[in-house]
Image (cartoon, rainbow, N blue to C red; front, side):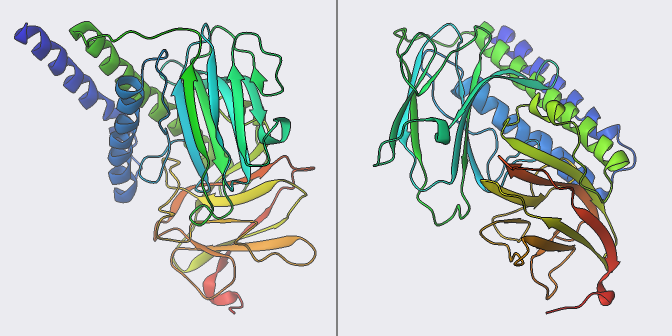
Length: 360
């Protein structure tokens, strides 16, 4: 039996080693991009092990986060708290809690196929504007089965994940929502871990790392080629197919400029529930928003009376309003998002010498 486990463990380690070829195959990466690439793979492994080992049972569902402060996927939003739960479209669930002081809350039923083809198809969506919520902030949402309730999502049988997006304009200081999930259709029985089950969970974890890293590497290479120092509209259906919220418009771009330069982004702010802009590294991970000004939203931004804004991005802080920094890196991805906007203006992006702009 010991030899059987050793064989499975050795196979896992060899397959993990092989995933490093995703980084090694990119010959034009800077030293920073390479180092962050290997860190990215380790972060994805942490996330995938949480998903596939610790929260894998759809009969005893529990929330985990596939993006947070120190592990990030696909242009994660620094203003968000993400919750994920592995569920089964053939079962029924009750989600309950209190919304706290959040600004936007959505629930999305998904078929998570990141480990297969890099997609996460939306199978049903609802947000707080379409739900009944008590004056106290308490709510109940039913998933699956048949319910005569405003707070209900029917579940196709291929549903395997629930994504919860909590958006805060001031995430540090606002009271966070409290959300729980439980199944109401079956009663779970304890099940001991077997060697076959562990092997399957490890293989699923590696497939998720490879699939996720491969998917967003393709994205960022396209942005580098076609969205360099620009924020075009792009194909929204393509972004939605990777797990995006249908109410959000995503404007992805790629920045690349020298240390004596800055990038100025000027746009009109449309009527919308919320907007923000963020900087990312080459791997589409949001930069370190715990410690540095790498994103801005309608709460933190200085907007002109005509509802326009200019965001100035530099490598290090400069004395100008709405200044964000790349933390010293020359290149990476970036994203502007609008939630439920009446229209989707395309920003003007210009690269300028720092000494040519007027400081505060």
